[in-house]
Length: 168
Image 1 (cartoon, rainbow, N blue to C red):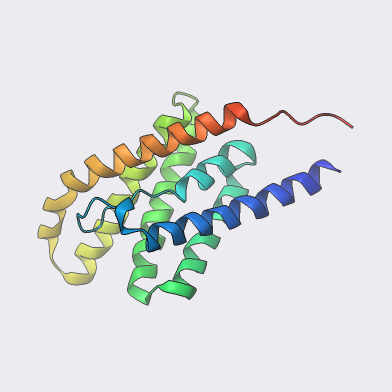
Image 2: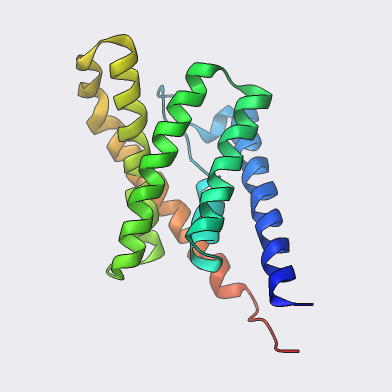
């Protein structure tokens, strides 16, 4: 199997897994902590995996596919705006931090979780005309950073168990 074929297969696998994890989170409210706007963000594990295993363009494709599929099947237009803002800001932060080389996947993912919350809350404040919503930011940053770090730890554990590709 060629390297290109493997990359395409991994891209498809990560996209499907990303969507499946998003759906799981939607179906299992126990994965949230009962605080509005807080989720485990499990799909981000796949975005981080794509970023580290494939590259930024492929990770962007996984991220965008997740957002669009969730919107088409389960969401609203407002939800799409929140997801796009959070996903874009999170992804931008993760790319910059990964490129810097100063952060592990755990740090990159943690910062991505925090940035996702900032993006979503910023859109909510703009759409509602209620800047006071930003007072909720410390709560979201705490949980977003923790969830992002946990997701980064999960990716790191999985990455260590992935067998290296053998040359054919």
